[in-house]
Length: 170
Image (tube, rainbow, N blue to C red):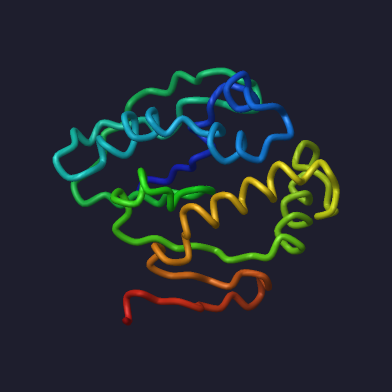
């Protein structure tokens, strides 16, 4: 099993904030380097790929590229990939199976803030969170992840996640 996150494929801060540090469109459109994600991880792990992959390319905390060595996937390896904006049209064909966690902003914002310093205010109404919330709304509107995901999970209550859509059983 190979585990990776879109967080290993951020763009540099100069690109992420080129539309302004509070720009929701910048958050949605400029946060991640999808070309590097495809080239370094997804294409090599796809059918016909070399199997030689890198699971990370950039550290957004230090705003620096990272030099990780290539790894070789074993035949039959499964990639478990996590992150936001993953049901974008340019990524959908890479997923054999996908899960979308449906969480209200009044739940996700405080949950994210509990991660620690640098993860924003716990108040969903805080101006500090508008880039995130409005950027997510753009994603939800344009990409409609609930429609393309294999499974949609209501994850508002961590103790009782509930499957609300299962395309596998349709």
